[in-house]
Image 1 (cartoon, rainbow, N blue to C red):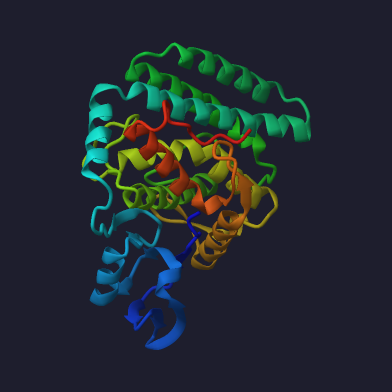
Image 2 (image 1 turned 180 degrees about the vertical axis):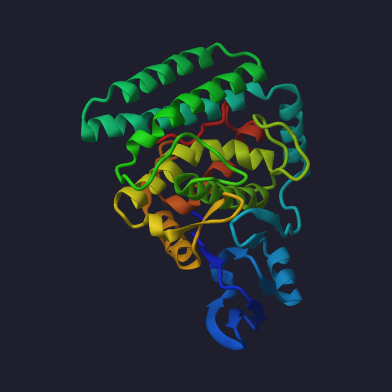
Length: 336
């Protein structure tokens, strides 16, 4: 089983990263503040004004370390892509299925997403009692699941997914128990409230980890089955991200807010109306994400105990096996 490698989040402005023998060194104001074994690092995410040496860039490219750059606010800018691994026949199969028969994979992914969303809502009812609006949303998601079974065209699958997401987020604010936080639906580019700021940042980070996992097994992150091809977008990573949104990210955000681990004072609003986390608070968020990744679960398909942080890699492997013909269907991630 693959070992969960560390993710390094660099948020301090003016940081300089370089390679020193077999270690990665982080310097701030010409002082060494961290030194880590390079082979223990799987992802490096740089926010804002962060410098990376050419030798470290080369190491990341050769060893498939996922190096990605974001603005200080968390908007994705780009990532380093190393040598493409895997069999060219696998990528040809991926392109062929994407062009000729994407619906079965897309349908499975969205079925898992809707089920996970429904369970987040049902958990709220189970823990805090009946709520008519939330129950109505659960009923609507059940209808979406039934409709999805008969969906034979990609546009129909997308339409069902869009409607289900709208129903889910229409009541998502009722799951937030801290009065200081309000949520009136999804908004982004830029996010205009603290909850959307958390969701957008964490979705973006996890999406880039998924991109790295897909590339590591030989798949092309940019060619998906649900999301349309678009220059600069990792459509396949966005496909796989759908499986994790509710179960992983949404639940993490709810936990952090409801347990007051994230406070309203942790955010600032810019003149443009964009809301973002303060620097110190962003570090706490990344620590919580890293802790979540180290938790262990029994994977519902392979029935092995794994760390949550390995889920993108496991799903990438399962998708590759399906495209090679080893699995009749792609089994999306869905906890029982």
